[in-house]
Amino acid sequence: MACCAIRCILLAVCTIQLVSLIQRQVLDFLGYMWTPIIVNFIQIIITILGIFGAYQYKIKYLMCYVVWTSLWLGWNIFVICVYFEAGVLTRDTDVLNMGTGSHSWWLVNGAGCRPVYNSSYDDPFFFPTPTSVEGCVLEYFYIEAIQAGLQCFLAILGILAACGTIYVFSRDEDSFDFIGGFDSLSTYHSPAKASQMCLQPM
Image (tube, rainbow, N blue to C red):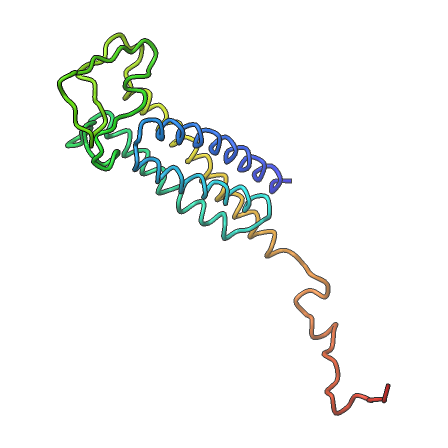
């Protein structure tokens, strides 16, 4: 019963994580944020792997999910630090956009946001960046930090549920008594050698 409960929790967490990841991936595509796009894509694959691992009782898939999701948790903490400019990190860093000059989709598309562009600036190799954005109900970096915080929360739940599922699966495998138990030699005998077998023509 414990196996079924924790497995259902893991499947539910992975499903919610997958839906939120797809939503985040779409918004990162709209903002041309290339590093998050790559990392999100890997996390989507690993989350699907985690769902298969929980559904098909595959411990190796779940271990892979736990390891990568731990890295994913670290990535999202880094993203929060970037958007809140912790330490030497700044929002204008090229780590998230791979030097393309693109910004978060929420920068100009947030609720009530009115971007102001400099019409004299025209560089075909970089995305147009507004000189200022006015009237936003919530600044874009708060929205990005909330999204990353949600991913951190789901990652922690997923890691805990996956570790619990691995533990229960491993315990159930160790306690499984197959026919004949571990004392198979006393119950079943190997077939006689070919020299002792009676061969008859067909």
